[in-house]
Image (tube, rainbow, N blue to C red):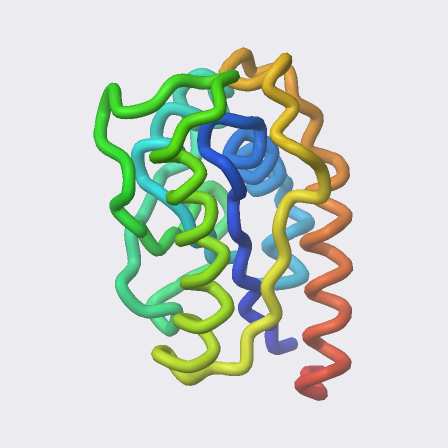
Length: 161
């Protein structure tokens, strides 16, 4: 069975988007359905992975074709917008707004045009939820649902059996 590649953008790094993404990717069923690739910022993923205690290994890839889709490893394309200590959770900031815009814009134009692969992209289905950001309290189930739906759509669209 071929698994489709699904691009996942994380949203605003100062909100719960990176957290629900990282938590969703600890679910083995996601990897049975697709090869998830996170498009975001290493620093937000690193911090989130740490405080959420997912135990995932973070593996930077330069090209979406390098994704392995192995449960326990989060393959990501680093946009490099953030550095350690450059942002705060629960706060509207110019830098994280720009990072959020960059991860969405890069996934739409970069993945489909620059890399040249037909990839379905999904992202978090909510606002920033600043009241929960950075605490490890966010629930990932809506992100799991979004990734599963994207995988089903991709299998149909690209006729993957």
